[in-house]
Image (cartoon, rainbow, N blue to C red):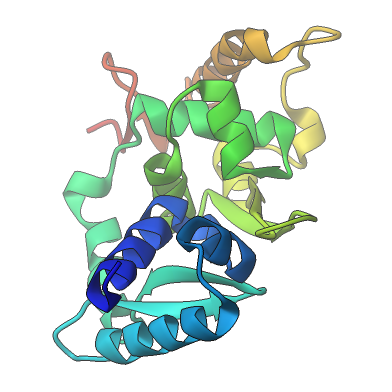
Length: 211
């Protein structure tokens, strides 16, 4: 492959790896190139993303590489999260939140294994709203981000700790995740039945102040 083709493939690999990132060994194995060549391409890509015309950047984190947004653009991302159109949580986000609440600390890949679908977007939404947070890194290649619920989660649900979540059946299996989600929704509705700050509408979305 030519230089521009290799960089295009690297960009694609970084994109699909999402916030988990991808380490040098994985990149070298996939591209079938040595470390010196890989470093050369990554350095060129870093320079390219430094341009003010680009909205993302290439960063090295915990021995891996990932594409992230730029800190200078943070006010715009905050505005997006706080916009009225961002006031709801989708069914996907609620399912992801239920799984995180009961199985934390847990990685995105593990959440996706349970749900059976990609979950990067709902996790990003939950993290952006402060309902979940990064609580560490998994051992092994890639050092996947581990997620857990935040203090805001406890406050919104009127819980003193995670121990107050409704108990699950003994020996619950991965196939029983739907029951976990149902229990989570039931707990949610019970908590906010009297004086809700957040409520579920008929479509199964969470809305602010009942709107």
